[in-house]
Image: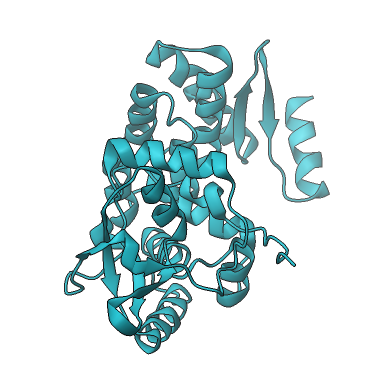
Length: 289
């Protein structure tokens, strides 16, 4: 009887990774990549994904035909020079579709693999790890250990959505990755930048505005909405619409002794006057009226 297919990150998590993903981030430099005959490699009986979508395998084969196998398979030695797949069965199946004779692998014993998995789980739980470092560790847990989204989330004590959001950071352009590592932008800012992956010019503009003008996450999100819905190309007009403070609001804020913001909408906008309690609200009303 077939095992019940386990829902996991599967193709979803793979789609979060750019095709030119640096395999050196996943595997240590001292781990030697070998080429092994595809006929000497056998799948594991414990593969959590018991059935494979042939359309997805074909799509992966098409990608491998263009880019090659970017991430080596992880295998363990068996008798008579055979090897068992620990991680990478989809790549192995796609390579067989292409009639490849050899595939790149990293050979590890089961004990070595267990130690690495434990180390990765411990590392991703560290509070001093940057979001990008966490993303790489999470991707390794998926790529090297065939863990599903639920399994990863459970092992590290995070929500499934958190796992996906972190891994998605690997799709940031290089300049944004560097800014995130240097703490020039926050993870929330990075997610706004990611939302403009289909608009590379505006994506770079947003990144620069966050750093140079100290844009808040809210401003960044509004920039994204404007780019997608309204198709703005003139940066000066965009900045004017996104701005939540102006010389006029600052003057009004001084007069009312509170913060005042302008929020632009498709038709006009609204003025926001903040107050801490009912007493302050009464004072503001006296000044205005």
